[in-house]
Length: 241
Image (cartoon, rainbow, N blue to C red):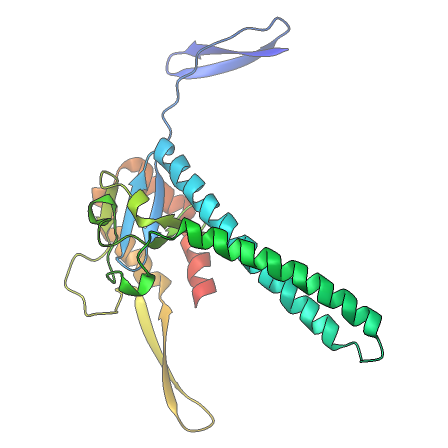
C-alpha cells in the first residue's frame, strides 16, 4: 500500500495505490521562536538549527534530571527510615543499604554533570540582561535559559551554542533601569503584621504589547507563530508568577 502525491498547480492531492511508488517531496520548515526574558529578546532559527538546540537541551536536561531524581529518592528513603523504631533493626539495615546505593548514584550523576560543565563560567560571573553567543564565548560561557514560544517550556542551552547569525528582535530597544523588564509590574500589599511588601510579576498584557511592537520587523511565519502560540508564554508567566 502506498500513497501517491500528485501535484496540481501549487498544491498536492493524494490517493492510495496498491503498488508502491516513490516521489520526491520538498518542504521548507518554518522557524522556531524562543524568548530570552533577561534581555527581552526573541530569537528565530530554522528547523535544522532548532533540532540541534533541542538536542543540546535534552543532553543538559538528562544530566540534571538524573541528579534531581537521585536526590528525591534519597529524601523519600530517609523519611521512610525515620518512621522505623530502633526495634526494627532489620528494616533500618535495609534502608541504609538502599541509601548507600542511592548516594552512589547521586555522586555519579553529580560528577557527570560537573564534567559536562567543567569549562563553563559560573552563572554568577556572567553579564546580566544579555544574550551570550559564540562571539562572547571567551568570557561568557554559561547555561542560558530560553522559553520556547510554541510550548512555553524552559529550554537550557550552553551560551556558545547560540549562533550569532540567528535573527533577533528586541522587545524594548530603549534604555532600561538595571534589573527591570518592560513587561514586569509591581504589586504592593500590606500583611496582617502591618508590613507593606512589593512583589514583581509578569504582566501578560504588557508583554503582548511589546510583542506587537516588533511584529512589523518579523516575517509572516514568525508573526503567525506568535499569534498561534502566545498561550505558551502565558502558561510560562502564570507558572513563574
